[in-house]
Length: 327
Image (cartoon, rainbow, N blue to C red; front, side, top):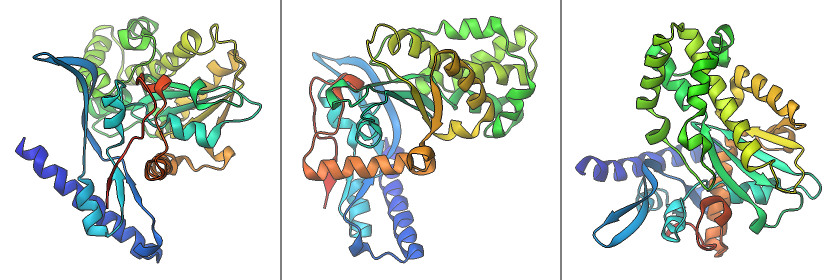
């Protein structure tokens, strides 16, 4: 507990230092900045209900103290976005669904906004959607299992360009076992993290892969395909099936866009379903800054008193204003 307490302030100080440094190097005065939107660093996220005595709740914890950031930058800081949605009975995730709706809804085209970060998540935007029609959920692992496997087998942080996966063969036996995962098959709303697809999961996959006689490259190829197949499985079961809505585009973002194996295999699967794959850049948004842009949008809405959660995405009972404000 002492470590978490100290880190809460240390991370706030480091965030503030990074902000001040960025402003100085950009020649921007702090007086020109209306507000800072800070997601914080998630140290624990537990969307399942837990009982303590006669109290039942979900919980989530992001650290990087907002008051510290506001004090050291002199700028109003908004953050701790997830907590209010959790208090309203939601998962507190995915919180970027509101941003996708605000920035990427098309009047004529149904879009699936697919992010492949550590976890993969999709925001479903029917044509000309009202926010009440939007839903979003995590489909399963994104880069998380791939990265864990690469660390364990190769001692590197990630599969650069998907090159190791491209040289391996996908094990249909192992892939079939992975696709039976309870989270992947569960209906939304649902959110995942390291508790579901972190180090322990990767250890199991490696052990199982080696027992099947797979090479290291084969294991990387198989977990990479697991990301792709879990995405399209969730499309088939919970988006395209019996929705009555027509979708024609998948807008891809996140670090997974730099993995050529993932992009190639996902595009093949989408083509079979009559879906066109495009990137955020084609809609005027640099993928590198999508998450940062999202925090700015959420902060703006919080300061304006505008509800910025999406109950059909998080499972919350109602729309609420997510974000605490440190002035």
